[in-house]
Image (cartoon, rainbow, N blue to C red; front, top):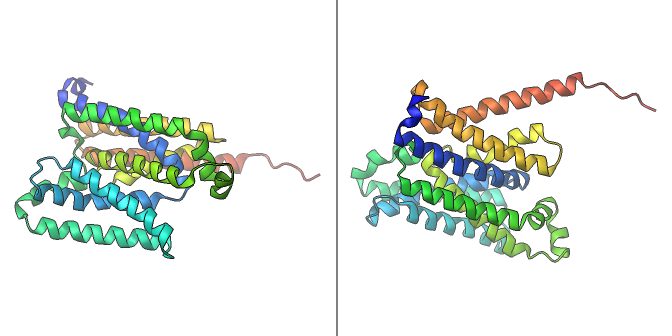
Amino acid sequence: MEFLSEPFMQRALLVAIALGPICGFLGVFVTARRMAFFSDTISHAALTGVAAGFLAGFDEPTIPVLLYCSLVAVAMLWLRERTQLLNDTIMAVLLSSSVAGGVVLLSLQRNRWSELDKYLLGDILSVAWTDVWVAAAVSVVVMTGLLWKLNPLALLTAHEDLAHVAGIRVRHLNYAFVILLTVAVSLTIRVLGILLVTSLIVLPPAIARNLSHNLRQHILLSLLVGLIGAAGGVILSYPLDLPTGPTITLTLTALFILSTTGRILRREVAPVKPVT
């Protein structure tokens, strides 16, 4: 693997190692709480953040993306609490309006259209060392937050009313989790792009679910699969001469197919217990 001696590959691999496991960890609770569309809405909202950042003169619009995505995430929770609208309706409204707003803002600055591809499909090979350190810092913060509130979050995921009765500050924990998810999604856009970022949130826990028997195994395997999928996709993309973001997603997809097939086969060959 001589190509790993290239500085840009080293940076890409380090970012993948930092963000892949964290996305897998978050994904355990995202999928269990049926929030996959939530993360998809946040990622698509990033288009407006990108366009607004360009319009404001940012060469690298990470901060505007993070701010706008956080605003959309908080708006989703606020509307869910204060209106009678269903969750998927709220998400669809915010997703479509954010994409439309982003396209309108980009139309005002056509000289930026050429840069849009790296945000739609990701451009991990262009990350700088600053991005590596930011990814590492975010990984530590998100991991610390999740481990600190792991038991309350697990109870909240299993039964929100029971968590409330147990004295957990459900509203505060919901907002904290959503902010952590938003930060992770916003930064992972550099890895997979707006169109594919949800795959790094959803596929690792889906794969882990096929292999695990309890929550602890589910979390550990999801962390491991996130690491293998992100790092493996980066490594495979170079010799195969493929775009890195889609290669990461396809690597995870292949693992999902293998794990699902294995689970189905195990069920078919499992001995049937006699009825007593």
